[in-house]
Amino acid sequence: MVRKSNNKEYIRNLEKRVETLRILTEVSSIISSTLDIRELMSLVMEKAKEILSADACSILIYNKNTNKLEFEVAICGEEETSELLKKKITLDMGQGIAGWVAQNQQIVVIKDVKKDKRFFHDVDKMTGFETKSLIAAPLIGRRGLIGVAEIINPQKEDYDLEILSILTRHFATAIENALYHAETLEKERIKQELEIAATLQKSFLPEKPVFEKGRIRVSAINIPARHVGGDLYDFVEPDINKAGIFIGDVSGKGVSAALYMAKIISDFRYISRGINSPSDVMNKLNKVLSGAPRGMFLTAIYLIVDVEDGEAVISVAGHPPCIMIKKDEVDVLEMSSGPPLGIIETDFDENRVILKNGDRLIMLTDGVFEAKNVSGERIGFNTILEFIRENRNIENLIERITGLINEYSKNTEMADDITIMEVSCL
Image 1: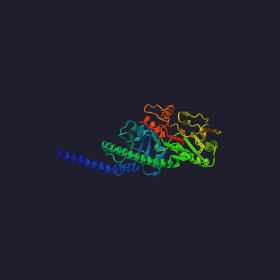
Image 2: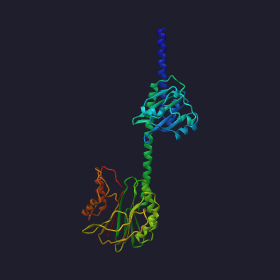
Image 3: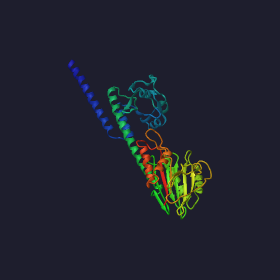
Image 4: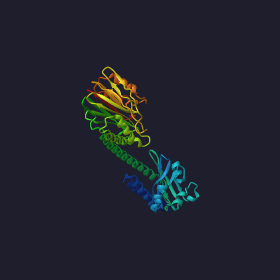
């Protein structure tokens, strides 16, 4: 009799192990079938609902930003109930049974939720669903808490908690892998979109960074701090013997600054046609930009130079000063300046400078002298000015200035967009 009893127990244990292996194999197959996070969660919870003959299953994902649990998947009889849970209900850490499980990271089995003080009745009140019993298990990955899985009103009672723990660990790993896959795809999508945006933004700038007309030669370097930026420059020909040179810096950086920069370039080109007065152009552009989003503005310099006699008329809107390079000296040009464009209505002044043979005029944006080293120290305008003085006779001066900035800020993230222009009188 004892042997028969032992044999029956052995067979039951063997059958249980076979069943456990079957379940683990099925779930493993489901887990490896997709990297789509929503499909994965739905498939696994459908399987859990089937295995335990449950009325419903749900997954609440932990939102680190809000420190709340949010319904991501809810599988029950009514689709409207599932959508209601996802749209309307969130739980604080420690709130309800799911919140307690998330906070304590322990699996719980509640035979009668009415007897458990932790149970959050508002969910049933809102959905009309009746929760009688439930199993709640934390989903914990390599990076910490992912969320909580709930199996509601399970009819099957001969389940093994150890098996459930194993399943939830496997499931948590699968969710984490799927999330990582989704993050990777999203990063790649953003990267591609930024590359497209960068290409489009470059198309708004002059096709070539060099412009020559008469005795005047202009060259430019533009380096955005990110894929796209808010610095801009342009060359126009307002008259047959005139060259218009424009440099500007939109407040901020990134996509919003880049979009605003594209608008400004378009507006500038339209406004500057046939106008030989830089202050008139700045006044008109200022009015156009007065409707800019709050906090958006433009510092700028626009000069129109006679390509025959070298006379340059310059209008400044809150932009860093120009640096004049002559044969034996380098000076910062003192010029009257109005406020940045797009802030207040005003009339911009004009400044006059004569460019003689061999003279060079350097214009730059503040990203040039705001470059930082690994200690967080800015290179400063005076360092740039001294470098120009020491290298005033070098032909590729703006490239050398760029090299200085790159060396100074090596192993750091660019603080701001960089644009440098050189106007030479030949």
